[in-house]
Image 1 (cartoon, one colour):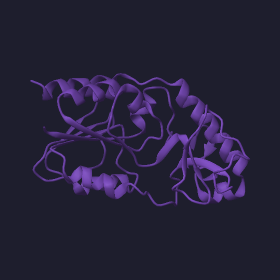
Image 2: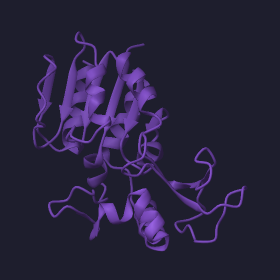
Image 3: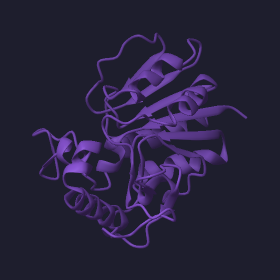
Length: 227
């Protein structure tokens, strides 16, 4: 069975009503990202960081998968589909996708501040100060913050290197290390980049740019695979 690897970014979640941190004003829900998405921010004001992610978690719980999420899940009926997402929501899973690798963590989970390998599901939308891991340390959002290593990037690179088709949806390919995954795409496979604004990326000779919203274009792209 042919393998399709899909890299998704904030644009796909934005079409479900979830705001991205790269809005035109450089803010994420009114916050400077460096005030809420760095280890330094956590050390300086953990209560504010915790509350910020509680509100993001609530927004994710209230959001629904859109047509693009469902189309990618449907693709599993015909191909070996592996999704690499930069998004911290679970909309891919809720749409039915089985193989999803989260590069930047998962908002509906928490992790120990002492041992990042200790990860727990969050019950509901609120993670409170005083909630601790089994070792007695405060729980923080299970998010890869700016300045932290991306533990799953090597696994993602291996997935990309074995793809027969590579699709990029809803990401401008400017955020590293995820953008560097393009370097692992084999030269002999087709690449499709779906983005209303064409990314500034031309290194790969077999790129097809689709400058349309994902909710309309991904389904048509998938239908073309099945002809």
